[in-house]
Length: 404
Image 1 (cartoon, rainbow, N blue to C red):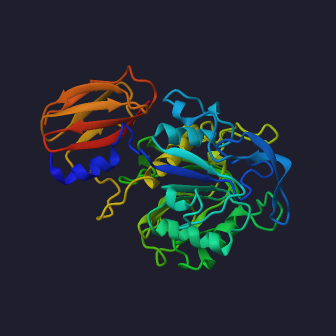
Image 2 (cartoon, rainbow, N blue to C red):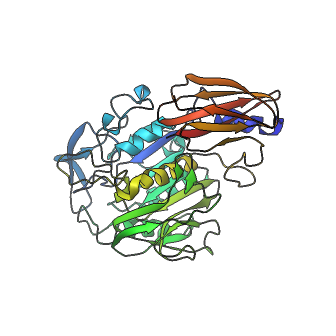
Image 3 (tube, rainbow, N blue to C red):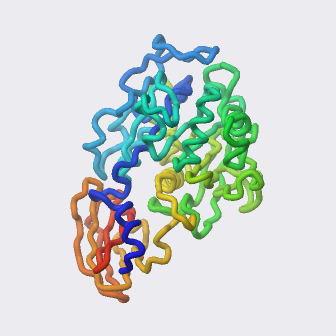
């Protein structure tokens, strides 16, 4: 095992978690819980009112997310159900914890800032920022903060909805809000190389399996379809950002129009974008809202795969070469991934394999022979995300796999 990937392995594998110390922040400052939306990970109070002027007060009945979800995420394990927290995107949050990320929410009265040391929830303290269907326009300062956050290494998950989806009746809906950020920020015009179309459509759409696409193919498996329930599409502009890449199309499998899901790089950071908020809905949360299970029921569970693959990719480390999988030439493999009953592990030299659950407990430990590798029975493992560590003479390689 070569020393050249020891440093990367150390960065990825600490205390049994592939993303130890990495935090993901879900925004709740932009009326994400207005009307029949409830795009919050967890809310202990339901007292927010969203006025048509864009204001927010504690005089209503909508979800009011606090910084730390309750009960504590330290008790979450591979079997924890999504209703452990109360919010229509609690399933997303729970899966993030199972993948090793630490989850927080940005309450409605806390600023979106970058580089402000007096703000405990400044974006510089997080690896990924999720904004799921904003319904209040970003201020000039907030636009600058978000773009600089990505430029300096952050991961931004951009979720829109269809045109005319203004939930707080302030004259702004999510496609217009995102396009306004892209076009009129003070840092860089169209930094991410796309805009949302002002469209409204529904339907089921197949995904073309593209080798090497970390959003389609990732630790949660290969996503094969999506279902839009009142969403929109995107138009790419590779002249503005040459890295932007379409993952899912409305029709066909190429081109710059009719894009449903996309991802790319900006500066040192990454972004992923989706044209419908319905796939994030897990049908739980505010009982006063009309919620539907787009997370698992729609598209036969493929939304979970796509969204979590993208989330994990956003939380990854950039490499000097820009390769999405820094171990693609490392000579180490574990497959199939996701796994059902058996996995095979191969390595270039005699080494030790350890498999850990999300609590850091060693579930399997065995020796791997050079070249021929070893087949392992993993049927006894519970369904969930696991990390593995392959240790040789000069260092170790860390990775993750999903047990179906």
